[in-house]
Image 1 (cartoon, rainbow, N blue to C red):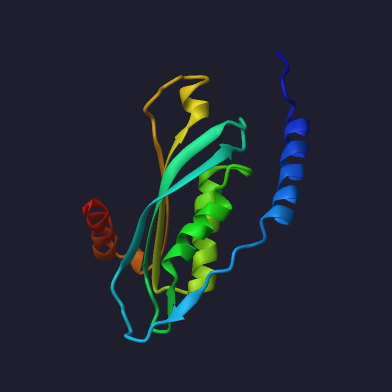
Image 2 (image 1 turned 90 degrees about the vertical axis):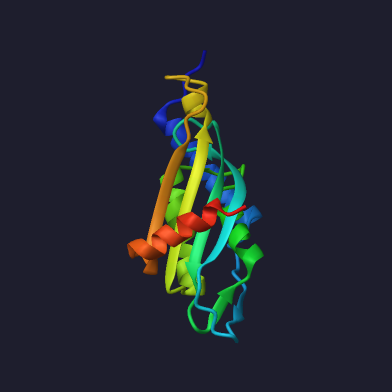
Length: 165
């Protein structure tokens, strides 16, 4: 068995990042004019993703749940929200779930400027299920919250909307 040193891992990750930047240009988030001044919560849920753990280079699979309260001027295109998740969490990248969650949130906040934004990632890490502790059904949840979602009532409404089928 060959062990990978930290230096080799960093070199590999830096090379992957360089290739990814060439192959996957930074996403554009198309927003539409909020003509009707919609001010409720918009939820885009069950956005599937697959990426690699930055520490162990094994698979991470999961779903993203994104809620936002649009501003009075812009409504992000719904498919654009999924594209942002796909950009930051694709099979060719190696990233921590926490970093990806923050990057997705920062990007949507910068581009769409919503009054409130919440991004929740739920993922299953092969580094938990296939090595070390070897627990099969452990999922990891992370969240980033901005603006109106810092208010408990708005956050509760988002989680209630996630339960709707």
